[in-house]
Image (cartoon, rainbow, N blue to C red; front, side, top):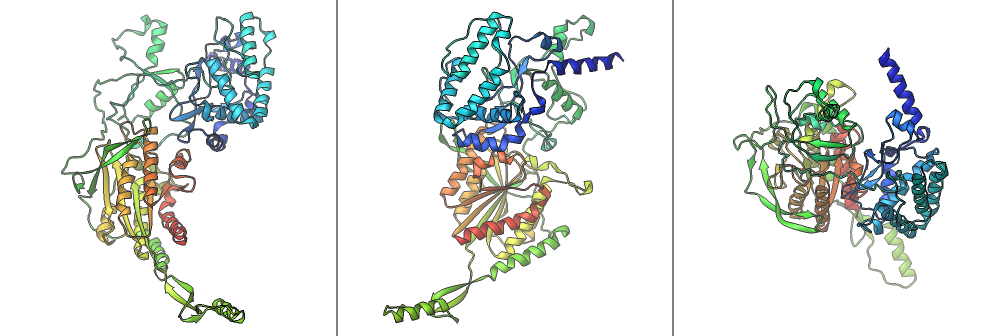
Length: 623
């Protein structure tokens, strides 16, 4: 009974202390797509993705109701770094939903205006945000009315005259003056507390990670990470600390503060398969402001760990050479690092010749009939000197020319000729560890892994193109740091599609990581050597570029984008097919709006891949 009463009290006092307007709340997910277009349209960094920020302590004065409820100490403010534009996951600052929606767009404009990206870096929070407002309103006068509505609505919610603390009232008045007339306030009056957060400005002290590096990430994700949890990824502040001592002290003699800080530590073994540990860690992360991370090398008995070390030479695929070096793009210095990555061409050691799987034979027959029609497709050439039919239009023009006394070259016939498909295609399949994840279906018995979907797609793609007589090659890739980018040859351009190739496709398995830039460069070099007039580079993937080293994040995105630009400069047509639900966050930046497609249901990829090829090649051959 006492616990129930406590829950009712906590819920009631928390709701009473809350100062937002939940009935008018706008979620970031509802406006993220429009915000991305708006942000980049104003000149914002097109390499940034939009993500939810995390609550941080603001250290401003709290009213008595907040202190009783234990709330009001944290706030979500907008900020950005080299990877993301972080915005509040939900905005309910104003009682009107339209104003909350406009606030999202104003914050995006404030962060995305080119002239404000690096200005006044050394200035304080107050001056910097006023300068940003001035620059934004100067460059985009159309935003002035929106900004004025937001400022008026924000100021109306609180009158400085109602504040009992004179210093606090003076600070608030100065902030309001800075909002009304950006650039008019250079410093705030002295006060014992920090000023109240201003949701119309960017974060005064963004929660950037401190002291964390990825040098010891040799143990990485196992296959369970392919099944990511639903929900918004949030940025967390972090620090590296020493492991707390576990000296067996009894609970009764611990100080309260020590007990709280010790409870924040949660052992997270990347090889652990205990879902309860993951849930506990997520709960702890949502309650703390800064994550303290440490290394624990203490062995734990009876625990299986998964390490992504390379297999032994006897068990690994067969290398087809010593390796091929390719450059890599350093976006911070804007230079290509020569001979930075190493491609290792490989071929399956254990593959055995096999037939097409029985569950694909019906679909394959239908696709073969459809693609065989491409080999018999013909086109009628008009205005020829000779042919099998008289060209009526050319004849009428001929008679008109004679009647008006003009000359004519005598091209009066039409001729039917077989259409030559001068086309080469290289399909590059992502075989990274994430393909070990499971794909849910409506029938639980039919659940399969991503790698199974990719395997079936490669089968049907090969059956279709073999029937069309188009030249094609199929390769897979994964990586383990820059010195080992595995490039698995499933079918080369000079090979005939047969049971041997089917055996290699049957033998594919999830590999390591996704150093996509190096793989695209090597695939582009192979495709560029083909004599065909039209050359299509198809990339099938289930996630964004990543690797153990700095390739994670912005570096991998920028290098992949550079590799795609290089492919286009070679006359190739790169196109990406993905099943990643987050693809809209980064693929438009990599391939352009018309350079990729998202398959909503991963299990539909095998049937849709050949149809996509038909559409793409149809457009290419028309030009």
